[in-house]
Image 1 (cartoon, rainbow, N blue to C red):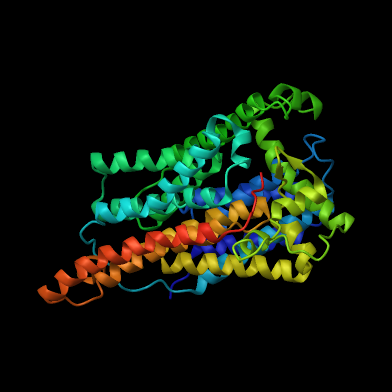
Image 2 (cartoon, helix red, strand yellow):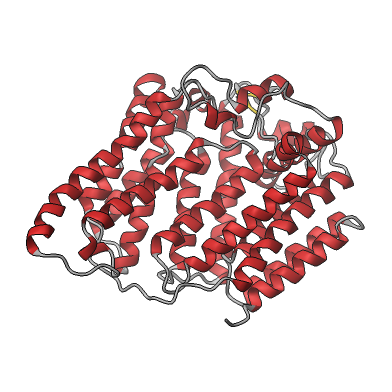
Length: 464
């Protein structure tokens, strides 16, 4: 077992950040951000969990937590320091686990490609969901208010398209390139993810698979192109926020919001990003400092519980009753605030430590010699955790999309091991012929699972 210097430096930065968070929280966060970024660049390990999550979460905290405006009130130093400590606990535990966890010792050779029929079959739930949405409320991409009128079951099905994008990433890993038909499938997936009007779906799908491909060493990321891509992604999110304000009569326009909340000195796109990120940071402060409770209801698991039979209140509706709503959607309270109110400070710290340890374990298991689907699962966990940190409510799709992806992969591997698993012996020709037919049947049945789950959901609602 050799020492992993990336994990070592990540652990040292996390310890320093936790120690000095109470003295000068804003400057400590800035120092953590700079040092973590330099380590990631120097060791060319941009997606190591301690660095990727550490940089992203600290950036969210700085851009949203600094009192650059009076939007949602001010954020106290105590709240800022508390959130920073949670972030350093996460990155520290990820570093500690990846420092001592060995990666697998086998190398899996590339095998014949995932068949197009399986990839297209996996897209059927998304196609059904998008057709359902368009037939009932139109195209929410061009009418932001319409997405809140869309049936939650349809939205649940539509988001399953992210799993299809991940199957395409595995196909790229196996082939080393995309064919013209592959690009056509990807374009279709992108359209299906954009139509429901949730601006982060497509970016999440792209980022998840980039993280997985980089971890599989099928894709190399250079610092300058990565920085440009990040700037473009942030610009896209900010531009979508401006567009949303421009087409909605219930919201202030971008210029009006900047004047109202006194951020005229910031570029318009950056100001919109600040508003979006500040909401969760400021509401976390209110939850902790004002001791707001939710009348015995769970917010974190609320949307998951809506999948059970019966009528249940979604997390967005609970928050709308407590804080108000935007465009009929609940606000984003932030993971730190929700966990602190529901479980207490100690369990909140423990939760961040466990999440960091899990991310570090996936990182090591997905290294050279590991199975490629674990690398994709690491991408899902890390990117979804960023969303969860901001949102504060566990979405069903954060669980079911990666699970759906894994089911398809495992079914293909179980029924056609001579093609998709290097660890299985060759099978007799008769078994191969039988498994080929059984494979199509099982994968087709697997694609119906999200349909059944979506149909069983009760009125979950969505947060903004």
